Amino acid sequence: MLVFEEEYRLLSQEGHLTKSSLLAGLDSIRRANIDDQGRGFFYSGLFELSIGFERLMKIVVVLQHKLENENLNPTNNQLRAYGHNILDLYRASCSIAKKHNIEMKSSDEQQQILEVLSLFGTGSRYYNLDQITESPRHEDPLKMWSEVINSHIWGLKYSTRQKLEANAFRYIDKMNMASSWYPGRNIDGELMLMSEFHYLYHATEKANFHIVWSLVSLLSPFYSLLSKLSHELHNLAELQGVKQTVPYMYEFFPFFLAPKNLVLKRKKWG
Image 1 (cartoon, rainbow, N blue to C red):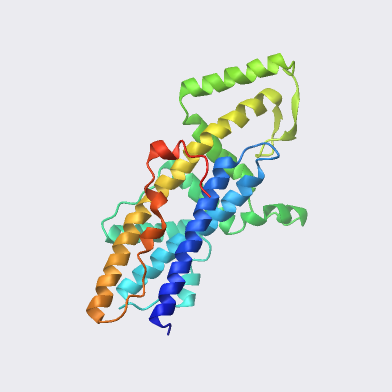
Image 2: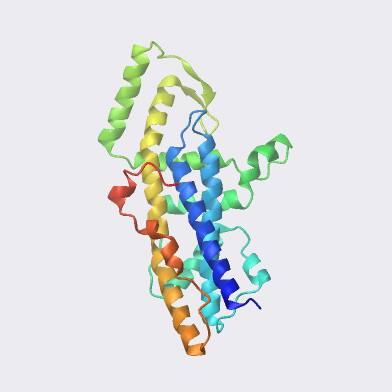
């Protein structure tokens, strides 16, 4: 059995690791784009976010187990049973939140994000190597993420999309590239005309702020849930007459409460 001080230290470290992963993921997704310089940030963003979401939700599972089992921790096998399946962990978190009268729900766009992160965490992160070794067991994560981008582009104001389109055609006409093809491919693997590249590059740049907001607002209820779990576990420890083993876990994640107007302006998260 862990001594109290050691368990407190380990949970604190887990809080710091989870915070760092989520912030790094948000930062990468904000900076990512479809050009050669920007597309690497999609991979790092998905990698960090999949780790961060998994760690966050496993913290919730651990705390709820302690609350329901006289402060005892789950076994390694119990926790490992969730694997890296973020969708299963999110469903478990929603169930736990409901027990504490905390509303936790996702929009269609947020559900789409969770699906990509879950597939990435359970294998799609190896897509490139799988393709090279002729073992195509997983979907292309960038192709899946391009659908997330597209749904958020369509969520932009109509006037914004019109302006982006007009700017793209104006630039192409000026550079005499009306029928020119972009030398690379879009992140979904499709060929693009230069006009399409110009539009999608700038549209993605704008959509990324809204994707980050989708992520932050998805994380927001976890602040209240971690607060409730932490305080109830402190009360339980007091009733048992033992030392506190759980930090106030919600204090690691103040950015979960960032308002939309600030998120849509914030350029750096890491």
